[in-house]
Every structure is written in C-alpha cells, then in structure tokens.
Image 1 (cartoon, rainbow, N blue to C red):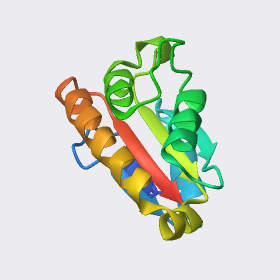
Image 2: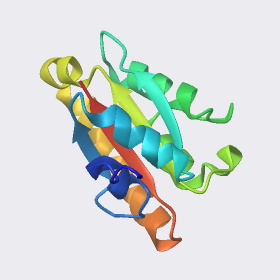
Image 3: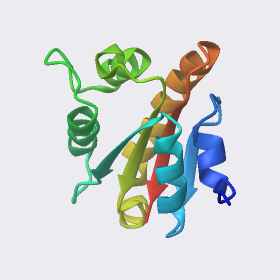
Length: 136
C-alpha cells in the first residue's frame, strides 16, 4: 500500500504562480516525495546575520549560479528565470532557519519572494515547477 501524497509534495510537483510555501516540521516527507517524483530539491540554511548580500550569496551558492551573477536583485531575476545549467524539470529551493530570519530581517526575504514569484510565473508558462519553501 502506497502512502498518500503529502500536502506539500502534491503542490511542489505542479507548476504554479503561487510558488512560495511556509512549512513546519512535517515538510520532510513532502520534500522527499516531491524529489522522488522528479523535482530537484536544493537546500540552504539562511545565513546569520541575514543581509541582502548574504541572502543572494546563499541562493547563488546552492543553485550554482554562473560566475557572471551580479549579486543584485536584477541579476537574481535573470538567473532564476534561466537556471538551465541545473538541467532540472522542476526546482524546489528550501530555505531553513526562516523563522529567525523573518523576525530579524524580513525585507530581503520579501524581495526574494517578489523575484521568485516572477520567475515561477515564467516557469509555469513552460509547464515546469519552481517553488520556494521556507522552513523553521
């Protein structure tokens, strides 16, 4: 008997313009199920202290951005819309330690969400999932 899909897994394998999720401790099963369905899952611990620069570096590092990445919001937009170097049919970025980061420095995370949603819209038009998951 196969376990029913976790609520998060069911969402992460589908292209969506609403591509930002906040998950509690139960997220691991959903992430594992999504990955076994063919979506590539990348994980990063949010840096402390969180700044625009440290957030951009963390995202760029885990998603292996090219050397030409300009470490600014426009460059983030460009790279998130591309991501062809990852050769993935779908991508999930999991940012861990988000509770502390949201309490201390919400502005860069809000800007990341804005960039992410624009990229997710472009990806969804191509039928590919691009999701961002904030975990405790």
